[in-house]
Image 1 (cartoon, helix red, strand yellow):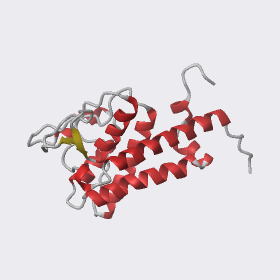
Image 2 (tube, helix red, strand yellow; image 1 turned 180 degrees about the vertical axis):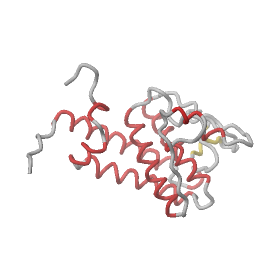
Image 3 (cartoon, one colour; image 1 turned 60 degrees about the horizontal axis):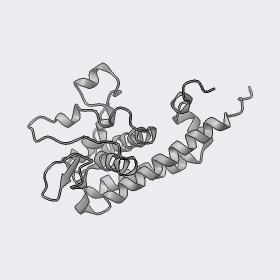
Length: 199
């Protein structure tokens, strides 16, 4: 059996930090929707009158699964989160990017794990959905795997309790990930945490 090279400790530390940051973000999102009155299934965010507003709107008080993660990131970093569900007979939210370009890596990691957890939950409901990579050309015409939390919220069984449990599973997964070097190396590629010019 060939010996594996020792892990690159500085890279592992960066990956661990990224996983912990995503964990904190997930817990913040779960806190936002811990009460059913703060959760919505059919919009990224609603104000107290039930009107759809931007995720980063000061008046937003209710959030869907993805909206809660986006709002938690906005609360933490101040990054603009312009996602807003537009009243339409079409499901346009499923064609728009979930995460704005230039978002922090912790948000991308949390959204990816939320997509996996949402896919698992949908599978328990008997729904199989194969999303495509958000960078693919078809992503302009059909939903990507990052839209799975929205699809879970739209499912008749995707009620508050189920969605909150799904978000909690993400946080638990991130806690396990942050403590397991082998998993960190498998789940988070080196190039994600290496800045240009670093070795």
